[in-house]
Amino acid sequence: MKNKSKDLLVVLKNTKLNATHFVLTLQLPEGHPQIWPGQFAEILVEGSPQTFLRRPLSVHDVDEKNHTLDILVKIVGAGTEKLSQLREGDHVDIVYPLGHGFSMVRKDEKVLLAGGGCGVAPLLFLARKLKEAGADCHVAIGGKTAADILRAEAYRELAQIAILTEDGSAGDKGMITAHTWFGADFKSFSKVYVCGPDPMMKAIGKLATDAGVYCEVSLENLMACGIGSCLCCTVSTHEGNVRACMEGPVFDVTQLKDWNHNPVCHG
Image 1: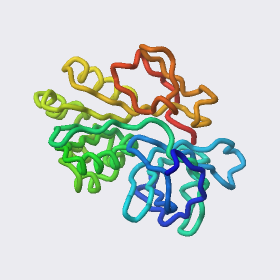
Image 2: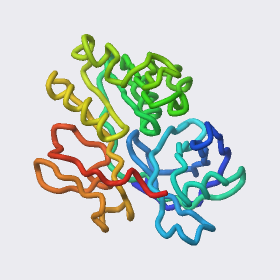
Image 3: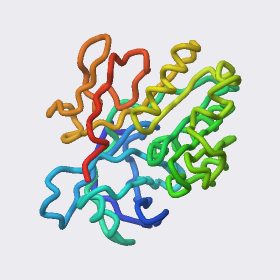
């Protein structure tokens, strides 16, 4: 089995979640590379003259029985707008899987996943694999409004979930860290996985470090090549500068000195 591949994948579905988010379901070929939670893909945007670089997008989910790959996308510019127009039967030029993903756990470990907005993208496949491993999985999803709460029902099938919005339009009102899982219950978790805005990840990372709970964060740094050549995704760690696209995007939070505030991703 290959480590990574450049393929032309058929679009099976383009599922609109709301005005700014959609999920592409792609048909994987027989003998495709093994894909791990937390890895990402680089997708070529056809028919968009102003979009020169591939778009780095997280692996959202993988159906290993039916050989399908889901990519959750937020429309933030011309490139992702063009991808939103893909239809069943279209083809996508994709390089995958890239990067270093999340670590797994032992059976019966109690774990917490925290996603803010489109930061939930890499966590669904992770929740699926954790459930398969026998973990006791909890998922906290946060956002500014109800429009930022994505795929809640899909997560509910795999874990206990909590929803928090800053305006109270979905779930409980407040920041994601206001939930009791990040308070009195926090030390009951053996591992925490986080993806979302930098301030959220840093807040949860500090809680974890102070509590002695192992924590992994998935960084959303600006990426161009996806293979470690351009160095635009450099992250400062206690062992020196590393590349988010190669040594990451997932890091043990205690490795990070002060991760970059790069734009989330290309448009």
